[in-house]
Length: 151
Image 1: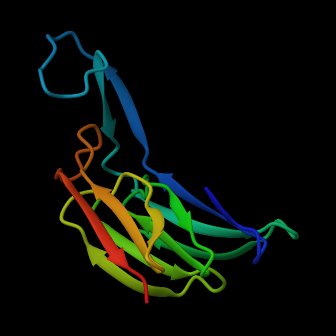
Image 2: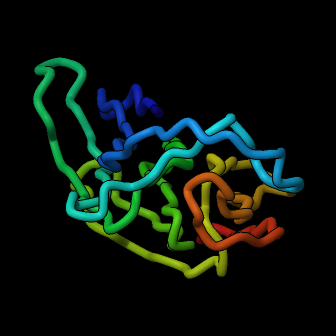
């Protein structure tokens, strides 16, 4: 979740990924997350997610953006009224914080499962995000940290 106090909005990434958990007797597979079993996606169920903005004063949803894959990477809201969020398919997006209009997107090459950060150097604003995938959810893996400058 992220908050924009000036706009009085809170932003949340929500996922809808129905699964079952199966206990399995097996040796540790090495190099993978091992829970003594496995989560298995229910194939007949729709998978996806949503980035949603809620007005703090009314409690009502101000806007939403539905995603094809769960956006498990978290949300970044900036003082410049931008909202950033990424998906397991590698898409990293910027939205207008007030309207939810998609302003920009970039394919990172691996699942974006970490929250973005924003920082300034020499008066120039940057947004950085890691694209490393997710073994448990079988999102494409990688090992990149991407940095973008803001206009």
